[in-house]
Structure formats: structure tokens, C-alpha cells
Length: 546
Image 1 (cartoon, rainbow, N blue to C red):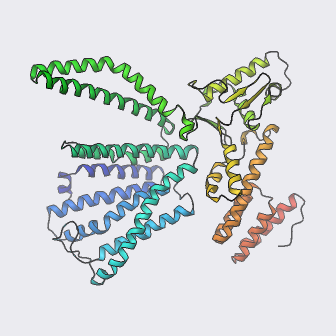
Image 2: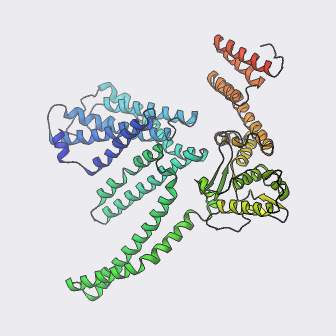
Image 3: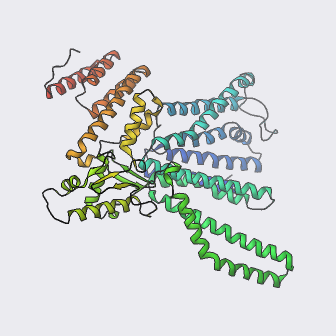
């Protein structure tokens, strides 16, 4: 069988080798991550299907009917179902929330039921009527007719859910996860483009359709592997820029050759001599136009990718302050070397803490250079402001005051143009607490730590830090109230999360003890009660009787 398979490898079989290879690499580097093993299993199922089908075609030996039946009736369901399951778990290895865990169950239950009913339904195989299903059971002919349509609907609902989950996860993710999802989205677009080109070639009766499919199929698993291993993760913008630029150049040069060689050739007549000078003319024109076309294409690609990013949903500049401090331009982090000044970073943090309110320059100078009276401090402040503007707008696309508004005596951020995570979090938290539970996950995902954790002792950061923490605790308390309706485990988890943020939250301690006792977990309840009493003693509070 291996000899037959090796002698007649189909192009798509080669493409599925990418799934097994990438899956094996991820499994080796990240053995606890399920996506690698899912990709490996998916590739093996498809490869096994190709090998099995080739064996059935070339041989009538024992087992042919069984192999054909399995891959016709059940194998394709396994192979198709593993891809959306991988997407549901990408990139963290976990479902993003309970709803998507339910989608995963739909995928597994629907796929398993559909595979079993299909495999046990008697009759000829769909792909080859000369084979009778050797696993068929007569009674399943009636049962399968009722169960199979329902299972098929549930299965494909799970498949669609797996695809939609990527969009949802992108909306609520941030930083590394969002960049990982961008890689996969970019690869998916290129894959669909390859398929489209293959279809066009087929419609025109031209060769090459299988080659484009073969090249397109490995793109998504390769992108998943690069994203999970975080190899050059933040270079996606440069990759897209290069793809758009040289794709445009290829189109223009191809058009030049078609017009000159085909168009002029039709007018002056084709022949060896004419073909030679027409090809030479096309080459000369293409070489002459290469540099102008490259510059024009690159400028257009830059405008498409980077200009007006905020209007397309991607902020031109963003400041992340919840947890680690980070500045991003068009989704890519600014490196420390670009700052050149620690004071400029500190000034930006202080302006963020002021929440867009104008701040007197003298006040900023006193905070940045305490106990100094150098006459050049105003100039040093101006240099720091210029550095911030250069970091936020390195291409100088906008006016000087676009992100940082400067008056004669004051400075302030323009929050209509600059995206700040703490401002977005507080806005979403207000919406959730007002009753819009659809923004719950998005709000929680933004709170990746306390406001400016690296400046924990700075007085100017304290008010906004307290406000953000209070909003987050309010979200968690609301989550705890809703969790009780979902089940005991959810209620326990929600209150433990509150205590991670505020170990002295009396209401969370009492609720945790109560839920554990209701669940009959008396040992855990006693330990939780001891922790409660200990925490209250630390702050001199007499706890209620629980």
C-alpha cells in the first residue's frame, strides 16, 4: 500500500503534510497546548484518507470495502470537525468562555452522532456503488433517517461557531493574542485568494489549479505555528506591506507583458523575430517602470495599512496602562529604544492619569524634575513632548497637536484621537453595570492588571488606579451574582477572583463560605472561614457570624 501511495501522490496530499508537520512541531515545543495535537490528528486523518482511497482504487484485496466505508461515511467528519475545534481553542488552548465551550460540545456530539449513524447505515457507498457498507445494520436505515439530519445540523452549527469564535476572540483580546489572530486571518485571506485563482484557471481551461490549491492549503497551519511559537510575531505589518507592494508590482508587470506581447503581437504578426523584440521591449519597459511602480505601490500600501487606521477600527496609536505599560502604533508595540528618554515615558503616563484634562506645565516640571530649578527645564519638557509626539506619530502623518494638545501654559492628551485602555475599560464597565451584559467579556479582557503597576508608589497615579480597581471589582461582583444562577462552581470561581484583587472583601468571603457549605464541601468551607477571620483581624474588623 505504501508503494502505491508513494508512486501516485496527489497535490492535496502534499498540502496536508503541512498540518502534520506543524502539528508535530507545536506538540514538541508546546506539549500541553491542544491545538498542535489537533492539527497533527487532522493531517493524519486526511493523509490516511488519501492513502486508503488510493489503496481501494488500486486493489481489491481484503479490507478495501471497510477502508472506503470509513473514509466515505465517518473519516471526513473527523477531519472537518478538528479544524473548527482548533480555532475554538486558538491561541490560548482554552475556550474563551462558556458559550464557546458549548459550541465545542455541539461539534463533538453532532460529529460523533453523524459519524456513527453514517457508518452504521446500510447500503452502497456514496462514492462507489460497487461497495456495500460492511458496517451497515438494517435497523439503522430507519433510525439514521431521523437522527442523521439533526446530527448534521448540530455538527455544521458547531463548524460555523468555530469560525465565528475567531472573530469574537479578536474583539475581546489584546496585545499578543490579537496579533496571533491577525497572523491566522492574513493566512486565511491568502489561502482563499489562492483557491479563487485556482477556480479562475479551471474556468478558463488553463493548468495550475492544483498547484494553487497545494500552495494555499499550508498557509493557515503555518500561520498558526508561527503565531503560537511567537516567531517574529510583530512583523505582520511589514509582511502585509511587502505582500501588497510586490503583488501590485507583479500585476503591473504582467499587464505590460500581456499588452505588448499579446496586443502588439496581434497587430504586427507573430513570429520568432517579432516575439523576440516584443519580449525585449516589454522587459525594457518593465525595468524602466519598476522603481516608480514600486514607490507608488508602497505608498498606496502604507496609506491603506497605516493611514486613517482609527476610522477602520484599528487605532493609529494606543496606550496600554492596565498591567504593563506599553505604547502601540497600528497594533505593533513601540520598542524602548525609540523612546530615547525615560522622562518622556513618565510624562505620557502622567498625562494619561490626568484623563485628557489640561495640566499646567509647571506642575508637570515639578513632578518630573523635583527639587530642581534649572532654567532649561522648560526646554527639557518641550523635548519630552516632542519625543512623545514622535513615538505616537513616527511617520508625521498628523498635525503636531493631534495626540498631545499644547497650550501656552498647559498640556493634555486628545482622547478622541488616542486610544487608552483604561478609558475604554471604564466606558465598558459603565455599560455593563448599566445592564449591557454583552460587553462583559470585552471589559474583563481589558483589565490585565492594575493601572501602571510599575508606578505603584506615584501619588499622581493613585486616583485613576483606585477608580479602575473599583470598577473591576464591581464587574466581578456582578459576575458573582450572575454565576450563582449558572451553578455552584461558577459562584465559587467568581468569588475567588474577587479575593485575588481584594483579599479583604467581606462580602466575597461570606459568599464563598456560604456557597461551599451549600455544596456540602465542609472542609473547604472551614478553610475559607479561617481565611475570612484572619483577613478581617488584619484590618481590625469584627466579622459577622457565618
